[in-house]
Image 1 (tube, rainbow, N blue to C red):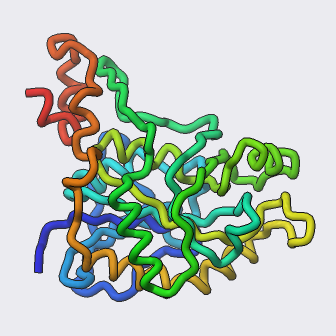
Image 2 (cartoon, rainbow, N blue to C red; image 1 turned 180 degrees about the vertical axis):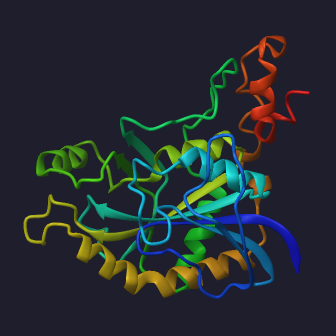
Amino acid sequence: MSDKITLGIIGGSGLYNMAGLSNVEEQNPVTPFGPPSDPIVIGTLAGQRIAFLARHGRGHRITPSEVNYRANIFALKLLGVERIVSISACGSLREDYAPGHIVIPDQIFDNTKGRERTFFGNGLVAHVGTADPFCPMLSEQLFEAVQSSGATVHRGGSFVTIEGPRFSTKAESNAYRQLGMSLVGMTASPEAFLAREAEICYACMAHVTDYDVWHVSEATVTVEMIIKILNQNTAMAQQAIGKLVAMPARRDACECGLALASALITAPDRIPAETKEKLKPLTGKYLK
């Protein structure tokens, strides 16, 4: 059994704990961006130590816009996490992505407005490439794990992230469909982009809970509808994570772990010492 914590799970609406963990402990990493949403639960699954974080806090007390995404990702980085699986509830903007299905998206459209989107600033500038915001290798392995768990799962699709906490209007929902979006949710951004800045592989297990509000023959989305589907999918999601943990990690097959190698643009001698120290867990291997 390895004591190294390389996989992190961020649980969304309806998933506030991870069943099947043994040797459980809680940690509260201190980050320069404040505390994460909840204490991070560390446990053993399939012989591996993994970290679980409830995005909205246990009891669901944090709105999508209030989530401290920077603290969450930074805290997982401090624990040594190299791969993150996000579990998110979402609405479908496609007929074939039906409620109860799982989608492993490959693109994000960021339509949020008021969130902190980067670790950088204060004298250190980085321009990180996010043409493909989800790690292709981790996404493929996650797809295989979900598929082998017996769920109906789709590979690919564009995930539009809205500010929330309200649901979309019909005009908005139909506009997203016209733009070619596949899913709508409230938390993929900036989480995925921060994971890339932290050089962590990131993939999303999106649980389709409804058809948003565009579908003329289906009921309009409600909280009750979302929780019902998520409760039905919880056992499958946990089983899929167990299967993923048992797979050999393939970080050599992606470039996530080198995202900052060509992204830092500020002259080293112009970076304030305080900023350099603050971001050392992210940039230490590049800035001596």
